[in-house]
Image (tube, rainbow, N blue to C red; front, side):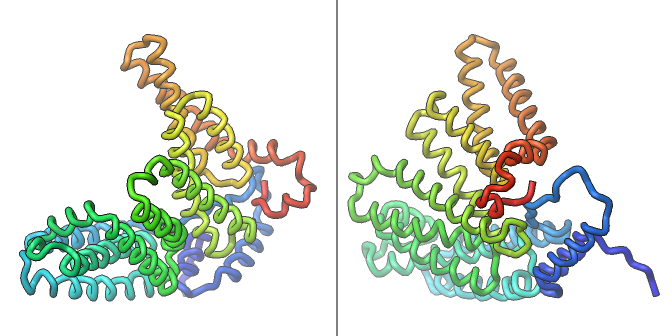
Length: 354
């Protein structure tokens, strides 16, 4: 019998394929960690599996190529029977792919590609149907006319957000794709947004930055709540929380920057808070969003000092790159120093180990 050596990554793939439960994997990982020599570094808790190997990337590229071809073909179809028959056939094909790739293979990256293509096809098709019912007679001629109508109608915005929310809810319940959970949370707020814009029109525009900030904070709050229920991140909800951070952090920081004109007095405290929050929660998404504006503020400062533009780019890249490397290499050490005074605090049990 061949003596195979399996890594934790191999066993994690077995969990993704449904062969092994998350709880069994957590117990096995804990046992193997206890048996191995102690490492000076704390275990990595921000685990994220977008793809398991080159085969997932290969399949995702194939789906992307098929999707490009499909939308180009749909765009070539004029207003006739083929224009209406082709989308349902395409959606049936995407569902069949989803059943195999997302349902059986549990491949995250290809599943995201299928989700995007199927969702876009569904929503555009619904807009086309809505256009024939509500729009001027004879206006629908091709796919470009449908997209143009969608951009001009506020009612379409409400329709798209509702359809998108229902689609993501169904996709998550069927395939448990983590990114769908974050899109469901964003979709709930999106429905509220679109309804507000459709009701009040231009009068609601001054409040958009505040709505975006509130949305980002709500997504971050939900992510923190999910993480607090599983500090060691051994179940599938940890990856759902990851996507909430991915969407919530940029929304929050960018909206504050937009409303304040990215002024240094407003952004520096926000960046410091983002860095501390990232370290405390052991999540890197907030700090990545903050570092983007570190680069922007540095560039603005160097331009004010009349430094050569090429040298400005060099200095910004060196400083931001150095910060990223410093945080990457010293992440666990920085977390330990930051959280050490609170080691026995009751709230400490809700945070990942340091």
